[in-house]
Image 1: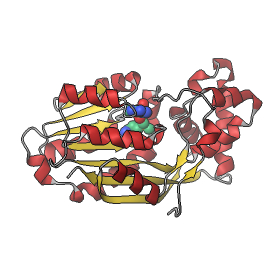
Image 2: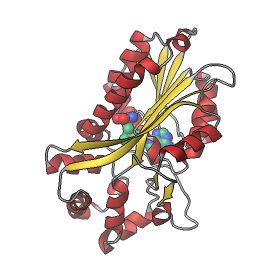
Image 3: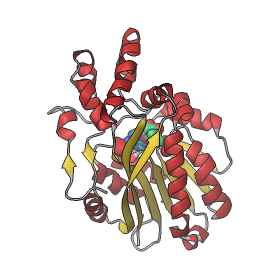
Image 4: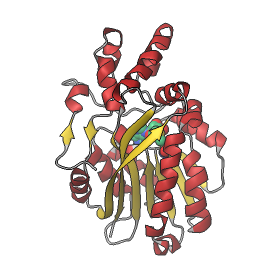
Length: 297
Ligand SMILES: C[S@@+](CC[C@H](N)C(=O)[O-])C[C@H]1O[C@@H](n2cnc3c(N)ncnc32)[C@H](O)[C@@H]1O
């Protein structure tokens, strides 16, 4: 577990004066076929935290669930729905993402009467306001493997609070995301290569920070989220082959699409090489996830 303050590495990625915008994923099928690590961690988090979630809140009439950054929709449909709709009895899940290509895939792959798919940008207060005006506030808010894509995490947590029930009415959120993302170092390596530097520099790659328990606690409290727990967990994952490592790295690579088709092969080789460089040649990677469980009351 990391100790100490917040280590800001965002200066490496954030060119001065550059407009910071949110990125979404654009390779839904590739993500769906390669997200074994995310799937495994999401299942573990929900398995562990399900007994900490409030069945009382779920009993309130018409209770609804928000999933922020649903991606290919697999976790929403296969992990969240059985727990929150079938077991807890919530009326519906609104599965959201900033990327319409991810939403289109999820809608097609996992249609269900209790799941509505819609666009939502967690980094935007206006988007939070629009979501609430369409659906009302949410009794439960979940987000898996998404909040590390957002540059202003405190702003995103404030938006999570905005879509939960107003003061004094019970609602809760469970947010799981990368606290230490190995990709941070990978893009630092790639940014030193003259062939890739301009792509790394020209995009606002939203992996800037390493979050500690202390920094997350402060952020959550400043957004009026009443923390039940806040953990930073050290994790390990082994890719079965270099091809799997390459495909899963490409699926979540924010600059892959911007690289000319004729150079992508070389880029993918360097992407894998950089991942191996940071892991000392091993296909096993160490990373950290943060899990925040909070209530509105
Ligand atoms: C790695 S995927 C996680 C998908 C799914 N939750 C899972 O765990 O498998 C991250 C998702 O977050 C979405 N995303 C990125 N920035 C976002 C934002 N500002 N608001 C909402 N979704 C965002 C991406 O488009 C992508 O689909």
